[in-house]
Image (cartoon, rainbow, N blue to C red; front, side):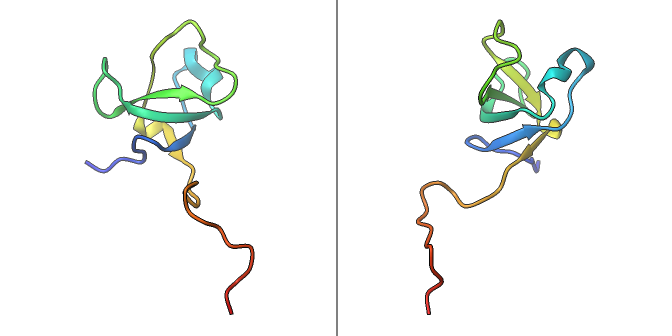
Length: 83
């Protein structure tokens, strides 16, 4: 099964149920498969302010996440274009 995210990704939340709408637009770290709901729900950790601090485990369906692409942090980025 193809997924949008994988463990280690940073993603933003594109949709949520009405009771979880405070999460839309927030950034999360994708930790792994949710231990309670199973695949395709991901266990996530919010980056910055957590809109649901009373819940220890947060999960969200893969379809509601959009990974943020870019250069991996561990790759060297050159300021100049080699000639």
